[in-house]
Length: 360
Image (cartoon, rainbow, N blue to C red; front, top):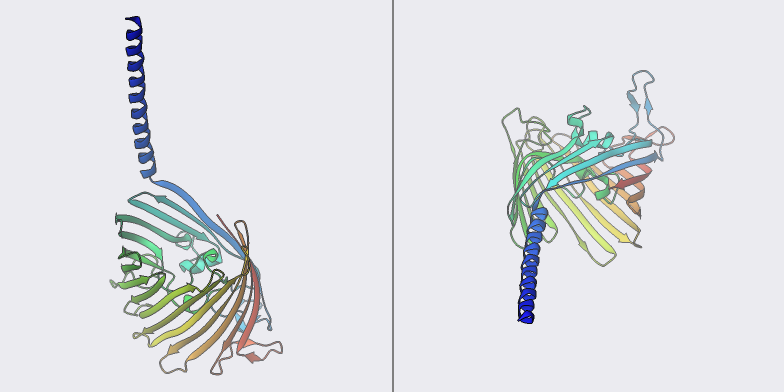
């Protein structure tokens, strides 16, 4: 009897232990699931600086007012236009990401940040992006706020571009939008974005009561973009833009950006194409060329074509990217905005820069 009683007792203890273990495992899984579903606070960003010099005669400035007297010191594209040592921008991105909803606050300082936000004041000059999003379903996301543009091949963040200086196409289009957009995953290969926004580069509100409209159709990393506003009050007008690229081998990538813009309100516009062949020679070093042909148009004036070649190296050490870059800009139709070493007007400008970008 004692043996039987002891055996039943042990069985009861083991059964209880098993039930407690299963219960603990289920509870732990529930807690893990709850923990995974909680929004997560994340930080990322970058800091960059550069040195730039021209291989032509330096422009002259008025000693008192500082006004440019002769010559143009840079190609006229956005960012990386200062000579000597210069700061690019500091960028801090704070995101609060959940399974369904989240928010992103992207702050920038420095000349590149001020140029990207069209402002030098302490408030508007530092907000690059500020938006909230809602994953309505696995295939639909709504975004409301200020977000970077969907147009073009290049972006504001320097670590996301291969070339450090920017193209004429990127510099001529919008940098950001304020509005509402909806992203749809139509299939594994196709995507669609539709948006209604304030007019081009209106950073705060639309005071005129007009809005702009945007759309993007994507297929396996190739994107056809459309943008429209009335073109009035400094608007962009209508732009059709293609952005894409292909990995032709494990080490060779070929990118393409082509755009056409017209503004009926101001009788202006632009069109052009940029090619981006890039070759990875090792895990830490790549070299790439941006070849661009760009034409700015204006009614009653001769078109102003520009050919620009930019050769960039990219060397990575942990989170640091070092980019040496040679650039040659050549203007057509007797447009001579630069000075040569003899002080005479010339149509081309050659320059060199080396940039350092740290991202985290």
